Image (cartoon, rainbow, N blue to C red; front, top):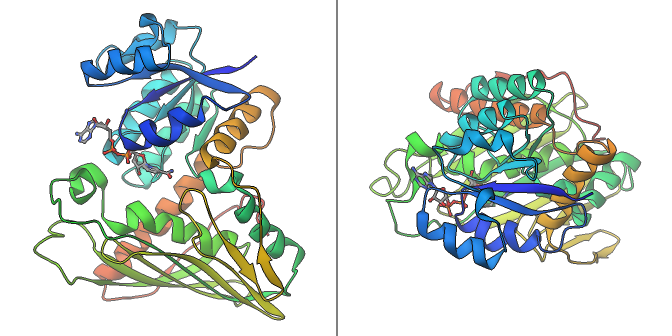
Length: 339
Ligand code: NAD
C-alpha cells in the first residue's frame, strides 16, 4: 500500500519541491490538497489528478477525518499556522508531517506532540536532511570517529532575503522570528548531528545592518555552544548573508559540507578527499522514510521531540540576546540516536 498524503498550503515549497517529489516516491503519493486559493484547486486538481473529494480549504479541512484516501497531512504553511493545522490533522486521525520550524514556540511544540500522542498518530518534522546521503555520512563520521573526536564545529545558514518587506518571513506574527527561525534551525541541526551531542549551553548576539528593512525580525545572529564532551561550536544565521556550510575540526583531520542544507546538489569534502553521493530529491527520500515509519514501523528519523528541542534552543538564543549575550544553560533528555 502507498500512503495518501495531503499537502496543506500550496506555496513555493509544495509547488516546486514536495509535489514533484511525490510523483517519484515509492511508499506515498499526492492524494489530496488543502488550499486557501480557489484557483489552485482547479490547477492542482488537473495537474496531479486529484479527485474533487480530496480537495479541501482551510474551513472545511476538518472533514478530512472521513476521507479514507488521506493517511498523512503535511503542513506547509507559514509558521504561525503549523500548530493549528497539525493539531487539527491529529484530531482527524491523520499522521502529521509538520514543516520546520516546528512552531512559534516550545509551548506550541508540546501541544502538537500531545495531540499526536492522544490521537495515536505519528509525527515527523520536515527535516529532509536526515534522509540525505551527505548528511548521513557526516553522522557516520561522528559515530565511527572516522577523524577522531570532533573538537570544533561551525555551521552557517543564511541567504539574502532581497527587498520585499511584505513577505511573511519578515512578519513576526506569521514567522515567530527572522533568520534564526527560518535558516537558523538548519545551523542548529548541523552542530548537533556534526558532533553527535546536544549542547549544554548557548550564548548569542544579534546584528542589524538594514534596520529599515528588517523591522520586526532578526537579520543576522551568531551563537556559541558548549557540549558536554568539551566540543565547542558556533553558528551564524542570516537573512542578509548567503552562507550554507558545516565544518568540523577533529583530532585527526576535518570534514565539511558546503552547501550543507540547500536542496540538491550538496557537496562535501574531508581531509581524506572529496565526498561523492548520488543526487536524489531529498524530499522524496524524506517522505518515503516517514511513510516507512508509518507502514513498517521503521525508525522515525525526525520526531516531534527533535523539533521541540530545536525550538528550546531557539528560545534560549533569543533569551541570551535579550540579556546581552548571557550564557543560557540547556538540558535535554535525548540526542535521538546521533553519535
Ligand atoms: P510560501 O510563502 O511560498 O507559501 C506559503 C503558503 O501558505 C502559500 O500557499 C500561502 O497562500 C499560504 N498562506 C496561508 N495563509 C497565509 C498568510 N497569512 N500569509 C502568507 N501565506 C499564507 O512559503 P513556503 O516557502 O512554501 O514555506 C511554507 C513552510 O514550509 C514554512 O514553514 C517554511 O519554513 C517551510 N519550508 C521548508 C523548507 C524545507 O526545506 N524543509 C523549504 C521551504 C519552506
